[in-house]
Image (cartoon, rainbow, N blue to C red):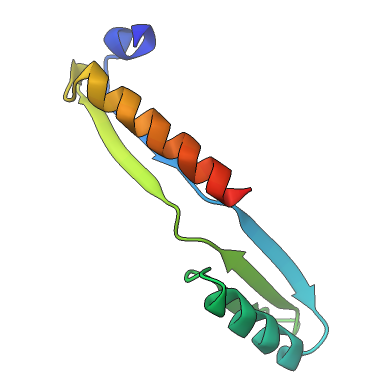
Length: 97
């Protein structure tokens, strides 16, 4: 709260979920892993094929959180709401593990 009160610009609380990158030898392997990830609830997962043929499967969860807290130095939310957001972000971090 002390840091927020001293802020002069915009402040955003941001939580980004775990990402696992897996280098796959074959596209079929990446597709199988992708299906498993999607069926396990990792909805933002995807496959990337690079210019040199490198196949990377990214397993990503949907546990994102991004909330503006202040604008131009003015706190836009209550301390109680910030505590709620911190609790929510910590719970998402536990889910990530």
